[in-house]
Length: 232
Image 1 (cartoon, rainbow, N blue to C red):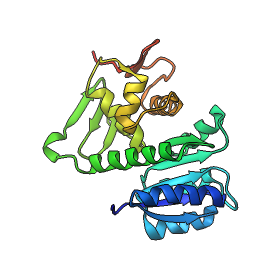
Image 2: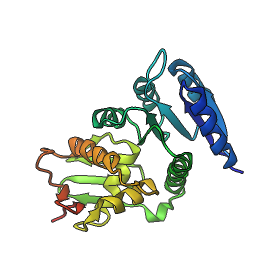
Image 3: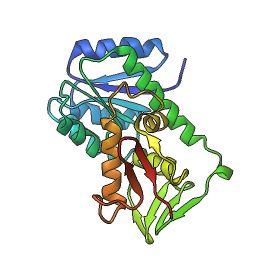
Image 4: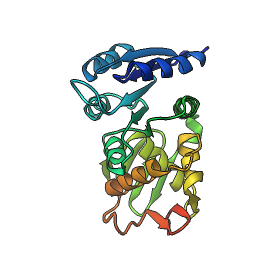
């Protein structure tokens, strides 16, 4: 059994019952909301360790729910939706989502994603202080102890996943990471051939730390391979 609390937010009863069944088998405590307003109240009361959030909801959609939660918490948020267009995935990740799955999906695959996010969060929280330090490169400063980033002395607000991406790349300067390799490092699971989540996070990260995101100096694309952190 585990002590993890998971909030499922979806207005389709069949979906919530199926997800709940599989996650309870893993020992998780499950809470369910079928609309955005109740989801926010439950998130405040329960303080879940992970949220599974549908985009299309009554009264308040999933994007707005995510925005509100991100004002107070970095809890992992896994979006689920029947929409598979890139624009919908981008919208979900832009407002603070950590991952995205499209319906219909395999329940076992969802469970794997949930475990990966919880494991990642646990590893981050258990990091030893003596392993943490400051990384600097070309005006960029990453403080692994305080989880903060500065560009030429000015603080930059990053999401948890953006910080993890930047940290992993910067800790291995000039090393090229393949898309699938980087996805596994950050999400602790296979991408199952869909690396759009990773690419959206990279794009958002570039917009925050690069002077010109179209011509990046830190996170460089190695065409046909993946990404690397450029360090002179």
